[in-house]
Length: 391
Image (cartoon, rainbow, N blue to C red; front, top):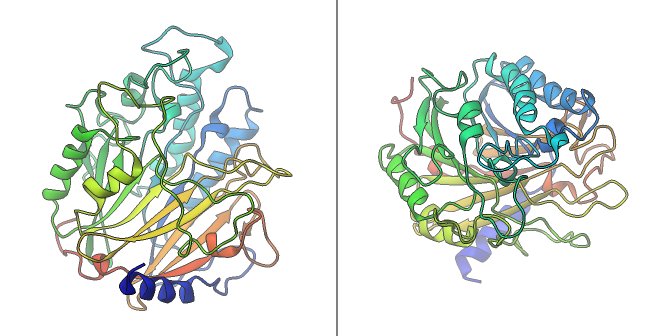
C-alpha cells in the first residue's frame, strides 16, 4: 500500500461513522441535494412472487421518492438493473409460461410511472435478468437482445422521449440501446450520469468515452449492474482495509458474446480510471447468501484514478432482505451531498419498514452500519465541476 493510499484509508475510516438521524425517517438540510439509488427490483416484479404484494413494495419506494423529492432536494435517481426477474423472450423460444416476462416489464412500468410523474431525472441500467433471452435459453448462450428493453426504457419510451435531461442511448452497438446517459444540475454544478450496460465490451466503453468527451468537466456517476462482490458472510472488516473485490465475468452471462465483455477490473482500468471527472460507480447484482432471512447486501470500495483522485464504488442490492416483503423490504440508498461541509452522507431507508438501517438497533443487513450509514469526503470532481451548461 502506498503512503498516499494509506493516508486516504485512514482519513476515510475516520469518516465512516454513523451520523445522528431520527429513527422514523431521514431528515435533510435545505442546503444539500440528494441522489437516490434503486436496488434490484426483480423480485418485486416477479410473476412467481406474491402479487400484487411484491409490486406494492416497489410502488411504495417510488411514492416515497416522489413525496419527499422537495424535502430531500432530490436531483437524480439511478436504478442499478435487474428491473425484472425473467427476460421477455422476444428473441428466444418461450419456456415456462408462468414466467410472464412481458407482464413483469408492465409491472415495472407501473411503479416507475410514479417516479416519472415526479419530474425528477432518472436512469435505468440493464441487468442480466433484463435481456430478452435471459430466461428462455439453456446451456451456454451469452445474453443478447434488447427488444423488450427498448420498448420499456429506450430513448423513444414515454420516460425519456423529449426529456431535456435525457441524452440518448447506444443504438449503434451489437445489442442496441442498453446503455444511455442523462444530465442534471445541482448546487449550480453540472452532472453526467451513465447507465452502462452489464459487462460492457470495448465498443460500449468507446461509446461511453464519446459521451464523457462531449461533457468535459461534468461531475460523473456511472451505474452498471455487475461490478462489486459483497463481503463474505463472516467478514465485518472495514471495506477500506479489505476492499470489496471486483466481480469476474462468467460464462453464464456475456463472456463469449460477439458484442464483447469486460470484467469490472478492466472497466475501471480502461474507462473509469482514465476519466478524472468520474467520482462514483454504482452497482447491484451481487448479494450474499441469506441466513435467517438476512443477507450481505452492501459493499464499498475506494480507489484512486489515474490522476490520483478518489473514485467511490458502491454495491447496493437488498433482494435477500425479506423480513416484511419478498425481494428487498423496500430498502433504498440515499446519498446526500453537502458541498459546503465537504461531505456525502450515505443512508439506507425503507419506506416499507419506516426504518433507517444501522440505527437504533436496526441490523437488517447483519453487518456494521458503516456499510449503510456513513459519511465520505466530497470528491474534488464535484467541487470543481463545470457550471451553467445543464438547464
